[in-house]
Length: 318
Image (cartoon, rainbow, N blue to C red):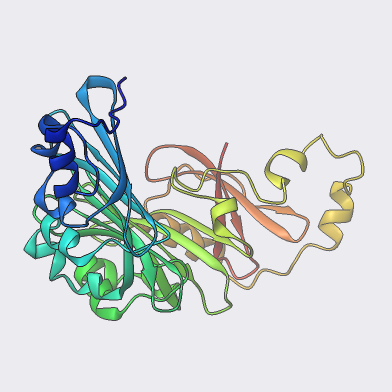
């Protein structure tokens, strides 16, 4: 690893004056024009593994820029700390398809861009101060958006989700949607809130069939997340209700206060079958909860937690 420092060489000083202090001719010629035009001060360049280079400097108006390039000079990532990325940088880095996309209009400022082979990730803030994260494929098609509890415009929901998904029972569970992520070409993860204000998430296929479902009354990022709704119950019930809690109620106590069913078990079986579930066990009362062992559409053994109306509250792995 080498760190380039300023010298007193007249030739080097001339180059430094041309661009905020970059001190080596071979480095300066490799730096993109759009980055040079930021007029960065106190610039440092560091060579990393596999020939990657990191360039750091301070913007004249305050804030720091960090940019990482591969050995061929292609941008890997750029981040602005305590500042927004200047518009000329966005114009140079992002394709016309991305810059003109409706979702980009949700940003009040962009502070980070990551360019990968399969996608471009953009992070920043909205007008209301909430975070915003977008992902685009190499053709500039939006494939993911996370608006951090800010409801998405219907036009973006329509653009991201096939008609079959938008018309599905799974989507009818949502009062608001703030996150959509496409997984491959056939699956979609959707997160938001129901009418009661509870965080919910579903994974559906392109035909609207539900593959995973989760509902939580608290912070959904603590209850279930990117890997697919298999985290344990946030209250720990998934692992402690059987045998690990010496103070738990007896089965007789639980049955005595079990809720009245307000659904037909046959209709529940049919509805879950249509959603791709199979291999059902017996419907059990577990205190105020109803649980049902089944096999989910992915072929995994799971336990479904239901409310007295037969709605699925949570799916956990067995």
